[in-house]
Image 1 (cartoon, rainbow over the protein chains, first blue to last red):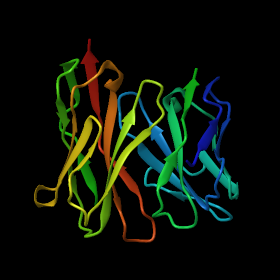
Image 2: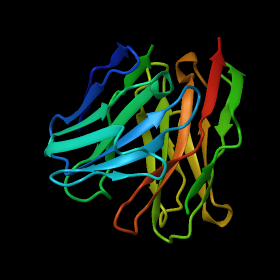
Image 3: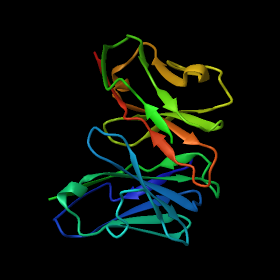
Length: 117
Length: 116
């Protein structure tokens, strides 16, 4: 089956630093990838839709200057949390539908747990 | 707007009991998908089932079964003879099949604890 990987699986950083999270589709191409955030004991909330070769689409209330998304290739999207603060500590999950259509089945990555001290 | 409601927040059962996880959804679209995902303590989402809005047949897969009723906008999930390994958070999700950007809307999740 399709596999989506994320790196790192966990990261601890100091307040004010930037952290980059990678999402890779390992055996298929993904023109679109989705980034979710999940706070402890809460649901997954869509942050943004990453589009290969174009700007990401952010959900209402998500700061695009703080959460930089780059989808430079058909297998890689990155999420950079800039000037991270403790309130950004969360579980970040990406997903990717196989192929061009976003209606295709989405495959989820294992998640990245970010802790900001 | 789409909405998924999982009214139960935490359920605790003893091993071998049957348990039903409820899911009620709202959408204005006529074509959509419904999903159930399992999230064990490791955090990785595990896909369990996808159901098309045109297919109201109930489905059984081993100890798992799903009851889709469009008339009540519900998509309930039953685990028969629960096991400790079933302990996890279970999410119901809805995805429209119309519109340029098909987003997945999750419910708040149900934490299931199965005690030995």
